[in-house]
Image (cartoon, rainbow, N blue to C red; front, side, top):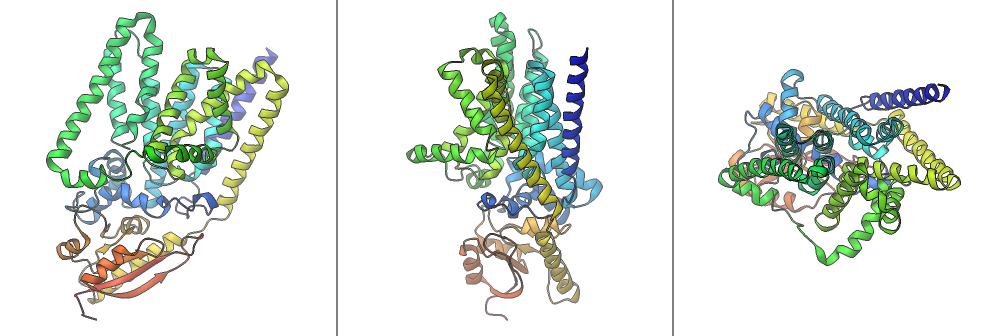
Length: 491
C-alpha cells in the first residue's frame, strides 16, 4: 500500500508539472522567437506562420482564400488554415489566437501521447512521457508558433491511438484511422513517411488473426488511397500551376549527398534533446545487436517506424532546419524511455548515471524555457504594427491608392499586426506580372533574403524607401525595408 501511495504521489507530481509547463506556453504568446544560436538557420520564425495561415488571412483581408498566381500552400495543406479561419471568425485576425490554437493542439498531443503510452506501458512510463514532452525546449518554442507541426503531430497521434483500438471486425474504426491520417497528410505533406507507424498497431494487435488483420489494414489503406486520389484529382484539374510550384519544389530526393546528410542528421538530432536523442539511437543499436525482444514491443516498433520514416525524409528529401525535428520529439522520448527502462533492469549503476544525465537535460530545457519567458522581446510584432500604421496612414491621407503589401513575409506582417491586405511575392505568377495584376502600393524586403525579388520589383517599378526596421534577426542584424511602389520612373 505504501508503494502504491508513493507511486500515486509521484504520478500526480509529474502530471501537475506537466500541466504547469503546458500552461506556460500561453504566456507572452506574441513575443519574438528565442534568439538561440542553432535556430539561426530556421527562417520559419519570420515567414512560415504567414505562409500557412495565409489562406485564412486572405479570406478576411482580400475576400477570398485563394490568390490566382499567388503563393497558395493552403490548397494542398488546407486543414491548418481552415482551423485558423474558423477561430478568426470569433476572434478576428490575431496572432495570439492563432498561436493559442497551436498550443491547444500541443496540449491535445500530450494527452494523446500519454494515452498511447498507457495502451502499451505502465502509468509511470506514460506520466514521464507527458512530462518530458511538456519540458522539451525545442517543442516549447516551436509549439508556440502558428506552424503546421502542432496540428500535424496531433492528428498523427490521434491516428496511432485509434489504430491501437482496432480489433477484428471493427472496420468502421479502421476507416476512421484512415480518415484521421488523411487529415494529417492534408495538414503537412510529410505524412506518408509516418504511415507505417500508424498502420503497425493494427497489425500488432490483430496478428493472431492474420486474415482479419490484413482486411483491417486494407480498409485503412484503401481509405487513405481513395481520399488522397480524390484530392490529387482536384489539385491536378484545378490547381496544376500551384502544384508545380509547391508540390514540385526542390530539393526532391538527393542520394548523392546522403552520407554527409545522414551524419549531419545524427548531430542535428541532439536539437531534440542532447541526452534523450543519443539514448534513442542506443535503443535502436541495442535492438539490432542484442535486445531482439524489443522488436516485439508494440510501442518500440511504433516509435522506431516513426523515427526512421521521418529521418528518411530529412536525410534524403529535405536537409531539415530545427522545426522539422519537432515531429520527432515523441518517438525519440518513447525509444529513450524504453531503453532506459531496460537499463534499470540490467545494470542499476549505469541506469542511475543515465537517469542523472536525463534529469540534467530536463533542468537545462526548463531553464532555457524560463530564461526566454522572463526576457520576452517584441521587435517583430512592433515592427509589423508600425508598418501597418504607416500604410494605413498614407492610404487614409490619399497619398496611397491601396493598402496592399507584397513581398516575402508579407503575410507574417499581416498576421502579427491584426490583419493587413498582403500577398507573398512567391507563387505561380512571376513577380512582374503580379505587380501588373494586383497593383500593390507597398513592397517589403528582408535584408537577409536574396535580393532577386527586390531587383525584379525595381526593374518594373520605382521603389521609394519609406521605413527600415533593422535588427529583427538578432543573429545577423537583418530586418525589413518597406518601400512605396510607384509606376516606373515616377517619384
